[in-house]
Amino acid sequence: MIKKHEALAHEPRLYRVVADRIQQLIREEGIAPGSRLPAERELAAKLNVSRASLREALIALELGGVIEVRGGSGVYVSELPDAADALAEAAGPGPFEVLSARRLIEAEIAAIAARSATDAAIDGILKAVVEMEAHHANKSSNEQADRNFHLAIARATGNSALVGTLDYLWSQRGRLWHKLKEHFQTEELRQETLKDHRRILEAIAAHDPAAARKAMRAHLERVTRTFSRG
Image (cartoon, rainbow, N blue to C red; front, side):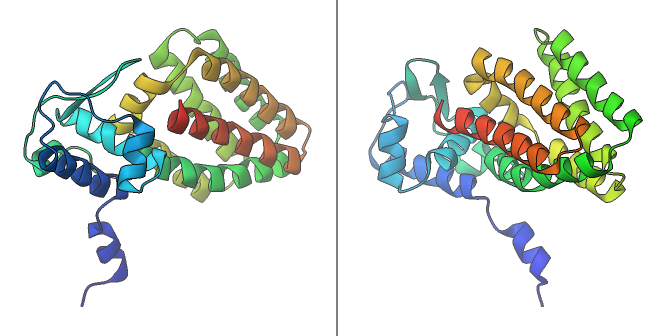
């Protein structure tokens, strides 16, 4: 008898299903290497999927060498390898799955932190904010400071299970996430992220759970909007 969690573990990710359908479309319509695929909006409508799911699938196919995403130009067919080979390294939850989970969980983590954060915990969050602002131009340091900020908020709850949960979600930011960020991260989003972090910090420091929840949710919704529509 297959246990429920085992069945879920083997269930194909939506973006992998969409990626398979894109490859099928390329083959059925005879789209040759070097040719441009339809625009994202048209392709999403043709496949009857969301722009977010389509974008994850395209990134997975780009990592597999099937397509090439050219900024400001479009998506082009590169090669036509076997579907299994193309998606072999695109395991785990997709970026938008992770963002969806983070919106749900981190908004409540921020609210709990606002209720229970000690002065020392707030200082830890502030340190991460200052670090991110100082390393704004350095992508690697900025990424680490961003992670430190969110984990500092989780630690401020005093609940180690929440810290572990958030640490797991951040560990899922693999090659799909980084490629998505490479293509669609904007300077506007980076600047707004710094402002968002300040607003979250201020709400926690004021011990205002409602404001902290709202600020965190608004921040993660901004990231989701930018990556899915940018």
